[in-house]
Image 1 (cartoon, rainbow, N blue to C red):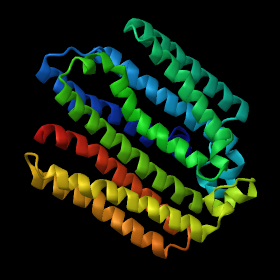
Image 2: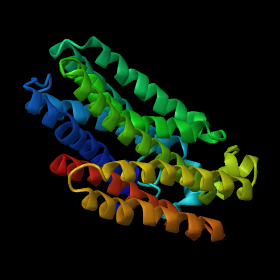
Image 3: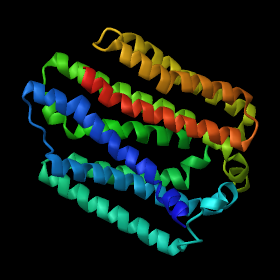
Image 4: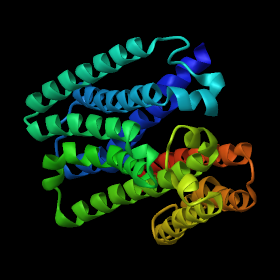
Length: 309
């Protein structure tokens, strides 16, 4: 039951979402705020609530995804099915409603507390987007993949949006550096997630086909989907290699190159090699799992960038 519950809640993913926002704030934003004498709009308590709200958005998406996909998951991952086995579908919907309402209340409080009403609108927008993804988008070729990738990139972007007042007080040169750093991480999160989502569609194609989904491997065939995944994986490399080249001009360039090569570039090259020869569900699952490691390495790049920068 514990394994199924962890899978149902996607606990590692929730931790990564929260960690991403904390690391982005500490090493890309607050560090600059301290150097420039700019006050953060969110004090530690309210930034924690801000991160918690993002985690609740993610959790709501995880729950509704498992509710909608209960029959698909029984075929693709029967050993980790939680809904219908440990909790009824009705009970899962009740939990979903509770999480959504809790997060909405928190978003309203935060928006009013810091005088940023636009933050309130982001919450229902994100919840609706993830609901539509689970109900409709994920069953269509690329639509669902791009939706999830945009959400992962948005986890980074919303931190800068929430602190845009302090950001506006920075000098133009520093603003450019901070914006470029955030855009770089958001772009990395987007392209890496897109690669993994296409690979997951290939891994799950049999169960998806039985439930009327029209994902890339079902609509165009596994070979074409593999080519699209390969191109996307090459995009990850084309994104990272020039970045490592530019970082050689910063202090501690050797650390960037070693960490980036071992944590991102070499694993992605191996992923592409395995993708080219993959012919089983286990092969695609291994590639998907290794891609999670690449994403984690990209996240851990942030404290390295902050300490050496």
